[in-house]
Picture 1: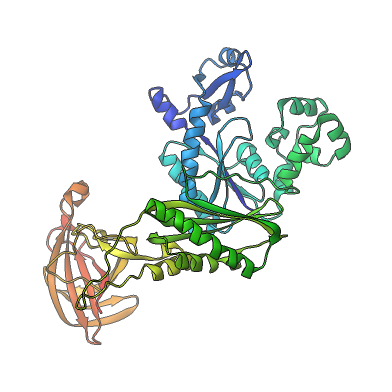
Picture 2: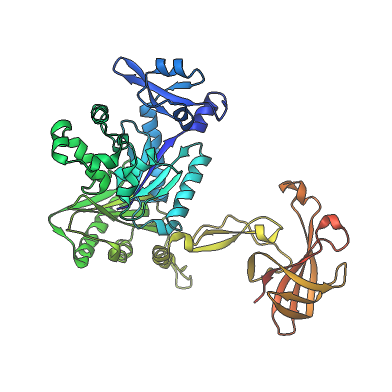
Length: 506
C-alpha cells in the first residue's frame, strides 16, 4: 500500500481574513485544553521562532509579541477537509480520508496504489496536488510512503515540500525523526523524553516488553503501524447519500473467476438503485477488503452517464488482473462515487430514420485501458491565432456552438508550436522560393497566400502591432505545408520577418 499524506495550513486565506498581513508574520490557532487556552496549530513561520502546539497562549504572546493568534474552528476545519477529500477522491484516488489521528482534523491521507500512472507518475502527481492547493490558498507538504504512519511522520516532521520514500525505505527515513511523529499521547512522549529517548530510531531498537509494561500497548502499536508490521486501514469519505452495494463472504475469496462472478451479481443491484433515481454512473469504485485489513480498489469512468449492467460488469472485469487478493477477500463493495442524471433518448420510430451510432461503450473501454486523459478530441476556440483556436476536450463532450474559422483552409496537422525554417523569398508579400526544415531542403512548386493574421490586442500590449502572413505551399515532391512569415515584410515592429513551419496538409 502507498499512502499519500497532506498536512494543510490555509495560511493565505487566514492572512486575507486578517487584512492581508505580511507573509513573514507568524500565525497560530488557539483552542482550549480543559481550562487552559493553548496553541493548537502553528504555521511554518511560527514554528521557526519556537511556537509549537501545546504551548499556553499567554506564554506564546509574552515570548513572541509579533505572533498573530486566531481561534481554532475544528468543526469548520473538518467540514472543509471533507469537501476537499471528496474532490481528491474524484480526481486522484478512490480511498481518501480526513486525518484526525494527530488530534485535530488537519490533514488528508489517501491510498494511491495503482493510480499514480494516470497522473504522469508519482512526482508529477504530487506537483499537481501541491500547485492546485497553493492556487486555493493552502500551504501543503506531501509525502508518499509505504504506510500511513510513515507518511504522516515525514510530512509533519521531515524536510522537503515533496517526499517520496522508496519501497523498503521506511526504517531509514523514520530513524532520525522525533518521537512526536508517532502520534503518541503527550504523557507517553513526556515519559520517553524523561528516559532520554527522543528519536524514533533509538526507540525502535529498544526491547519491546519493558516499553509495553511501562507505557502500554499504544506505543508498540504506533511503531508497528509506522514500520508496516500491522495494517492501518483508511476509512474513506463517501459522497452524501451515495448509491452503493456490498457483499460479505463467510469464507474469503481470491480466484479471478470468483471475483468476476460476484461483480456480475452486484452490478445489476447497483444499477437498480441508480434507475430508481434516474441517474447513471460516471465514476464507479469497486473496493475489495482483504482479511489483512488492506483494501484493493478498481476504478472505472464512463464518458456519459451509464447504467447498463453488462457494460459496467465488463469494464470492471477487465481490471481484475490488477487485484492482489493476498490471503483472501472478505468483503466486496461497489460505490457510485459520481452519478449524474441520465438523458432519456427516444429510439428510432420509422423505417427511413437512421439510428445514431452510440460509441460511448467503445470510448469507455479505451479510456479505462489507456487513461481518460489520453483519449480526447479537438474542439474549436474563438481565436484568429492558429495555436489558440483549438483545445482538447473529452471524446464525447458536447459542442458549445463554436465553429472553425471560415474562408482559408486549415492544415490537417497543426504542429504543437511553430518551428523555425530557413527560407528565401521576395518581399514583401511573396511566398518562399525554397525552404529548409528539419535539415531537408524543399523547393516550392506552387503556393497560395498570403493570409494575414493579426495579434489579439486584448491579450496585451505586445500583440498590438504583430502580424503573420500564412502561405499554403506545395513542393516539387507533392508535399503540402503551412508556413508563415513573422511580420508584414515591411515594418520591423510587426515581427522579426523570420519564417516558421506551422502545419501539414494531407
